[in-house]
Image (tube, rainbow, N blue to C red; front, top):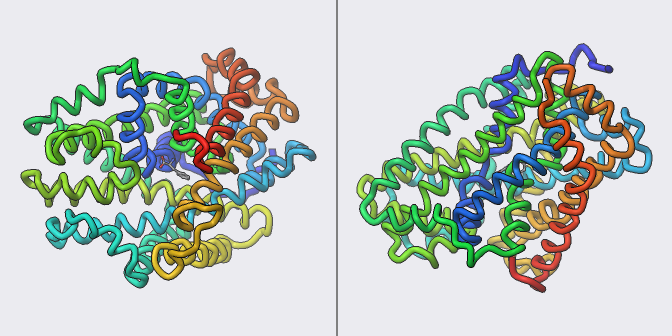
Length: 455
Ligand code: PHE
């Protein structure tokens, strides 16, 4: 199809797999997965999650990637090339979502840089106090500085291009990330008292299983695989026509679930062994990473080194995800406006700085602002994109496949390079399961966002 000569590409399968896995493995794997698993029944949550990832997750991942490779375009261009007149809103949604996520993701990336810096400086005791995190957030200038640093690093990588920037950095960061995750979880699991936590994490507790387990696992899986944000369409459009798409997606799923699993192994047993008496601590939710973990590192032998290693791991995970968001936004300007890479990067950079500053100041100067009654501006953007816009855009992508492109064309695209062993499962999931599943997520997240139910 219309592959323009200038369009950059991944050099081969490995480059694609590491870049897409880099996008998938992010903050969601490291802090969100472990606490959700702990809350929703341990082993039973893991099992549910894996089953959903190889069915639903696979189906949506493949739909997006095939649409991207088939059209050679990022989201708006891809929807247009397929003639999706009534569904064009889906292309726009996929474009807006990453532009709204990237700024706040970079603010959190900035917090991670700050924590890493403090651990390297040897400040582990100060970090372990209850008020350290909120004190830092309330400071105004310091969070802005760390946010800008993170944003500049992301910018510098993306401006180098797909092969020289995104791919080269992911190929280095992802293997290092896997090594750190393995090392930290082995260290965590072998601490005295950690076995209780391992049992809590892995042994299925059927009394905690409910329909909410499935809903929570499904929501986590979409977020974790970076589905429905235009990222996979864009990365698919950079995929050469000789890469085995089916096996590449399988490998990405294994890496993403594997890192999430290891994150649980390094966090939950350590919290049991060091933060005293498990359950309430593990359920600390989002503050687990910035409040509970520093306490764990403070009371653990070699905690300073382990803390630095942990935040380095989180930084790499956040950075590769931010790169994928940045690249996706840039690709829209490249395709739609026909701007140069430098100009497109500057435009995206400007959006990130403006919205990022708004998000960061939401904890200090604008801490009195509560959009839709949410606790802060960042939480609002997170809710808007992940809970509302993302399920809608995923529904539109599925409709694009079912109603506009048609299964025949998608299947033909996959079969150009893959045996497509999961063809029947793919068609079945996309046709009958994905849309109802997404509607359930959408409704339950609206209800829980407005505190009508608790997820
Ligand atoms: N998939 C990432 C994670 O698990 C989250 C992410 C969201 C990445 C949006 C890119 C874009 O943390």
